Image (cartoon, rainbow, N blue to C red; front, side, top):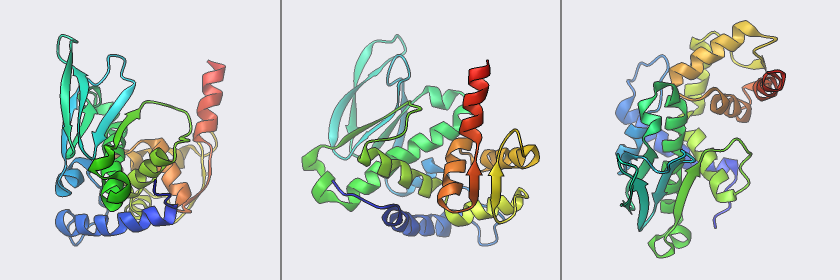
Length: 232
């Protein structure tokens, strides 16, 4: 297994985003977004949607080699589906509800990140090793190194540093946020939410990315969400 640092992952993402911008982002742009479906197609991968599990516990699957997996048809019968090494399979429930756009985009980017890492290190993740990944719905911290790397690369692809900084400027958040809090800084919280909506990512993903880029000093979103849940 390749053990990549966050700096290694940023270096992998930089040339990919540079090529994406040359192709899809106008020269004079105020703030750009990265469409992970468009990016996947640009890199030679296709996105397919299907009911992967009955309970929605698996959001996405991919493989760097040809592997059969199972999905469910319209009658909820289990059928076989071929992951051909170039396909990213996404749970169709993420497509049907527009409120899931942030989770859907991150799931696509996560699976695409696996493919990019597999391609970068073929001796470790090449077809002979039959690498398979499924992206599961979970609120727990990622403890698997392979999955952590995919999460980190997904964030770097969806939220390049210049796109985040441009978004902060456009949404009136300045060059750096000292505090992200729904309770103590309501105006900036709503500006932050507008920014997440514009970039088409979840608020959680954006907050973590801003922290990693040194653009957010203190993030209280998770703490406050747990407090509201406990009080309910």
